[in-house]
Every structure is written in structure tokens, then in C-alpha cells.
Image 1 (spheres, rainbow, N blue to C red):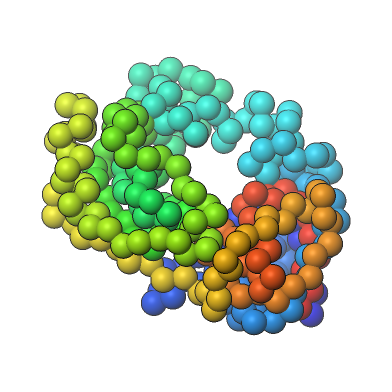
Image 2 (image 1 turned 90 degrees about the vertical axis):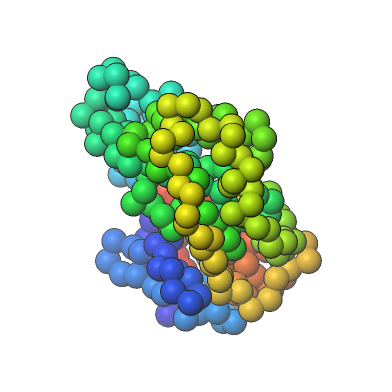
Length: 263
């Protein structure tokens, strides 16, 4: 069986075990159904997710020209504290920025490798946690715009990490933590502007990933350097395929790559 299309990050569904879907223009695949099967990945060409042209991907699935100009790649995406739509100030496209920044946002704790703080739109919970490979997570505050979430994250990351150790996450070198206790301990560091939005009574969300076997060491697959790869799929966690030989493939890291997937 063959599938061909441009890669985008996998769609997910939080059930007892996370369900993963690769969505192409004309087809889709439930990746859970091909666990323990030999699959191949063949890199064919680039296709920018914005302009659709066959141009080398720079970041986030976009060519350099698009990444440098479109509002979907503004600096406030990575650094939400730089959001300015609440001030009616434009970065690249004020209408688009208002449509994203002036929506409810969540500041959360997620445990993928160690506990970390993060920001996402409310509509992206629990998707964001799944994408990070978090086996447990909890909300800290729910604020009305991205700026407030950003300054809260900046304040809290002085006291807790804000990065995921993807190697530890993929080898399952993790431990359970009491995220309620961590949340309550961090409350004192929330900026005054966001304190009224503190969430005091919610509980941890537990997430279970479809992994049959975790590797002891991981070897990242880069389709630019290795355009063809074949192996037995043993798991999916975060946005990664995990193969029997320890190879791991970051699907999101290859957005904008047109591939042929064989099963």
C-alpha cells in the first residue's frame, strides 16, 4: 500500500490511547493501525505549506520568503509575550493577529521529560500536550489574550523549565510528578495582571501513547541527509515515529516535505 503527499503535523484524538492520523490532500491514514509493520519513507520534493511552490523548506513547513512575511510565522508565535494585538498594534497582519491573539489562552504545566511550562490557545488543549509527548499535564491560568499568557510563561520559566528533552521523552526516561503541587507552588510567581485567572481546582490530565517498545537510544532520521528509510514501526509519541532499530522520525520537523509512504 502506498500513500503520497505533503507532510503536516499529525492530527490526534485523545482516547484511552492517543489516535494518530496522517492527513494528505486526497487521503488519510490512521497510523496506529500500522504499528508493528514495516514501513518506508521516500522523500520526493519540497512543497511550501503557504505558497505551494517547490521551494526548499526553511522553518515550520514554509519556504524562506513565506516564513519571513506571513503572519502565521510572526515572532509572537514562538514568543507570545511579544503579542501586540491587544494594543491594536500590527506586526504583519493585524486582522489575523487579532483572530489568534485575542482568544482565550492557557498557561500549562506538561511533563514529557521533566516538568515544563508552556502556552497555547484554549482550543489546542489537549492537542498541544500530545504533540509534546506529555504523559501528564495541567492548566495553570486561562487568560483572555496571548500577551497575558506570554508574560505569565516568562515569569514562571524562571522557576521551571520551558523545553522538552525529546531524547528522554522518546526513551520514556520520565517520572510521574504531582503537577497540582507544582502548580500551587508556582502560583506566587504569576504576574499580578494574570493572578485573577489562576485555575485552582482542575486536575491532571493523563495521556497514554501507542508505543509497543521504547528504544534505549534514539537516532533521528533527517530526510535531507537520508532520503529513503525503511523500518518496523514500534510506536508513536509526540509527533515522532519510533522504529525498532532506534530510529525516530519527527513528522512535524518535516512539514512541507512531499513523501511516499509505503506499508
